[in-house]
Amino acid sequence: MKLLILHNRYRLAGGEDRVVEAEKKLLETNGHNVIVLEETNLSIVNIWDTIAAAGGAIYSFASKQRVQAEIMRFSPELVHVHNFFPLLSPAVYDACYSAGVPVVQTLHNYRLACPKAMPFRDSKICEDCIGTLIPLSSIVHGCYRNSQLQSSIVAAMITWHRLRGTWHQRVDAYIVLTQFHKEKMIQAGLPAEKIYIKPNFVFHTNTTEFNSQRGGYLLFVGRLSEEKGVSVLIDAYIDNNISIPLKIVGDGPLRQVLQKKVQQAGYANLIEFLGYQDKSIVMALMKNAKFLIFPSIWYEGFPLTIIEAFASSLPVLVSQLGSMAEIVEDQVSGLHFKAGNSQDLAAKILWAINHPEVMNNFGNNARFIYETKYTSVVNYKQLMDIYKNVIQSVNV
View 1 (cartoon, helix red, strand yellow):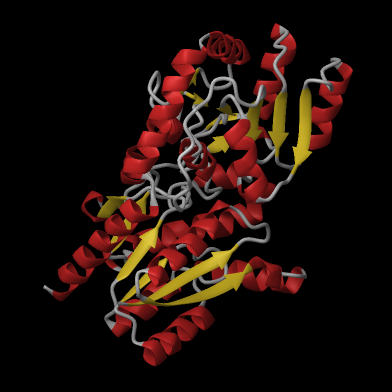
View 2 (tube, rainbow, N blue to C red; view 1 turned 45 degrees about the vertical axis):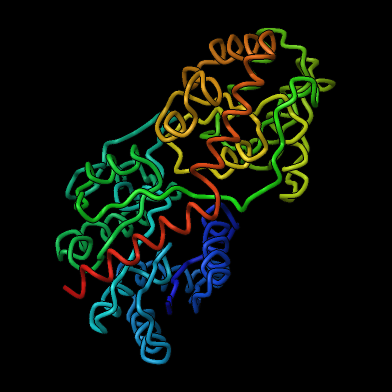
């Protein structure tokens, strides 16, 4: 099969970019001819670039022409769009439509429901714009990049394409990552009959049975920013005198503040900030940790970190919220705690430490779930089923 993948990379590489790379590798490994057409936000270097990108985010004729030219040259059987924002824009759908090529769009976030792409404001979940014709609340609060002007542009993009029928008529199928994600996008007005659920995956790793004696530390992996809830985790430690070592992998805007807090509380000998680490080191840390803690206080999309933990037979303590609570089943592959509640998190940490045999079972369950749901083999079949269904429906 000849496939054209479209993707707009962000300035800082993240989970979406990793998924695109993994899916390209997966498709090529299985004999498909794949071309990736990309834009990158690194090309936005000055105020004039920003102004041009803002206008183009609503509709980029240049991107439309670029995609049209690639379709004429390559003749793909299907176009798979991952991220079109801001440089590609929804104009790429029109290029595909005019050429008669079916389009699949993976929704890695909540952009079509929320201009910020993250339903989170003022330190809590916010659904003010989900399901509204015009997301005025995002403009009032300047949700996108703390700017009313930039929020207005994103809101205009969402609204204009909703009114002209782009989301319903120019996209043949949407891929979302969880049932929770699907429900939110239906709430936002996307056609339910076009939405498929396909989770993220990680390539197969060697089986590692959970060992309750391994490591002797707990692990957090993620961006050190408010929505990730790492401050909740640190409060759980400090306020409850938790004494098992904690390794924090990642970087972000809160790192200095959190490190200072840990030092002032006298916990620097227990809570270690490792900064950003490459995947091989993260996986090694997972294979030697007692369990992973994932304390996000927003819905999340589909964190690869959790699936990497499952692949490492590592149970996960996770916020009882959104997609996280769907991926990690309470008392099966880990434990749920109340989102944002450091006391409940501390109680679950202490319980887990005091029940090593139960956590052992959870770790082995996590590996089994990975093997049955989140391997590349399983994901490839799911992806092919979606592609075939879309191509058949368009040709009917």
